[in-house]
Amino acid sequence: LAKTTQPISMDSYEGQEVNITCSHNNIATNDYITWYQQFPSQGPRFIIQGYKTKVTNEVASLFIPADRKSSTLSLPRVSLSDTAVYYCLVGGNTDKLIFGTGTRLQVFP
Amino acid sequence: GAVVSQHPSRVICKSGTSVKIECRSLDFQATTMFWYRQFPKQSLMLMATSNEGSKATYEQGVEKDKFLINHASLTLSTLTVTSAHPEDSSFYICSAKRGSGSVGETQYFGPGTRLLVL
Image 1 (tube, one colour):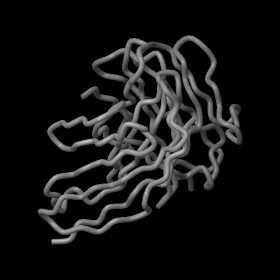
Image 2 (cartoon, helix red, strand yellow):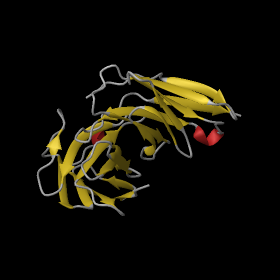
Image 3 (cartoon, chains in turn purple, cyan):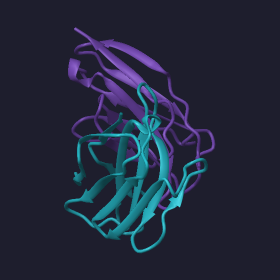
């Protein structure tokens, strides 16, 4: 199982773009990269998943360089409601997901 | 996205009693479900992997006789905390894996169950 490293916390202001980078130097060939968002007293919510290059959906973009040893979650124009903990996980189809510390994002008005 | 529910959302019980938590995948079949525990200000800790029709696989340090897991169908897994003690008070979260076995399956999480043991 690939270990991930993320910043413990980040601060931003409403309307700004937030980029959270995750390192996963030991990622395996069949591992996907998945990001989750968690609010207090709620289960994690799936945000986005990717394998390589760039993936975009209605809430975020995920940038993965060619060596796949890191990935960056990009949240465009954050709002106060984006204040949460963001987890980066890697794993293949038979792997259990092991959560790291996550990144606590605080958005200020 | 796929929906996973948990019941109850919160429960308070006396020390020594047993508590059952249900996890259901509402709009998909899940051959594999997972149970996590989360203490305040900490990350999720995987407790066990639950496979439909077979015994659960527990992570190191998790007592299988204390945390009984049953995956009776493709949409239901239950976690029973037996002889609960105050130190078992925590936030229990389940997840279900959706997919056909190909790479990139996504796990969807339930809303969690807050257990308080008095």
